[in-house]
Length: 352
Image (cartoon, rainbow, N blue to C red; front, side, top):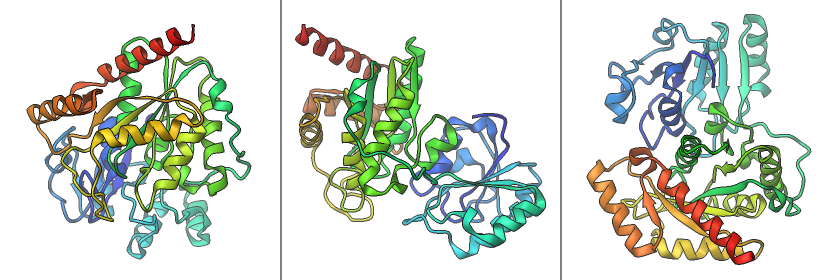
């Protein structure tokens, strides 16, 4: 994060679930955001639409957005499949003509479009494709188990359930508690915000675990905690592979399960979401073959709950699952950190 002036493109999809990148950047880097471009909600402010954060303007056109003096246009939504909608291409070209940096997390790489590249070169604009990954990634060899830092992986009961947010909140809480902690992004939103990582869903399947291993090795030195952002979900029909690759490659010491208690069916595919205790057993079993990694707590995604409802859900899940359960956005992630520390202390004592 730095001194950018960001205009977020969220055309037609500005909301908590549909504009995940926009939402997270507003939550964690609001001081850098000058506004949001969305003709559907234009005239309102971001806090009115999202229910949190500062009152940033929402504009209907790029011309209105340019009047806010941005230096960066961030594509703040990711259509399923990550492809570039045709109607956005003209808008992106105009932003580059205006000399803006365009940051994109789409699978369609703007930097491979010769016309957009030519516009940027002529105007002084810049293209940043957040999902580009190196060509020389390794196959995993369990080296992530060698680091001294405590490695924590967030895992989810569904895709788009708040794993990046939970990972960021864990990192911030650990730092507030006096620990040296690093956030390891594995998706385009986290990469735009902070940390050293890569977009794991662009990695060839054979190298997903190796990429996760590399990120842990790169970030662990000098830190007490390495918090790895999870992706997908082990039982999601579309995104299970990336979840398993991250689990086996990062070799975590602990897992934090991210769960939306009011979501009964998985997004996109509408498969019934299993009870939390079954998810805990699944993740611990899948990790244990290589390295025990207990699920030490549940991070509740309570975006649609008020504080009393979120607290009640936490108490209910704790009773059912026997793990700390808390909404880290509403109440902080300190209890989740305490549970991780206690679990590690118990493990160390057992080995003596």
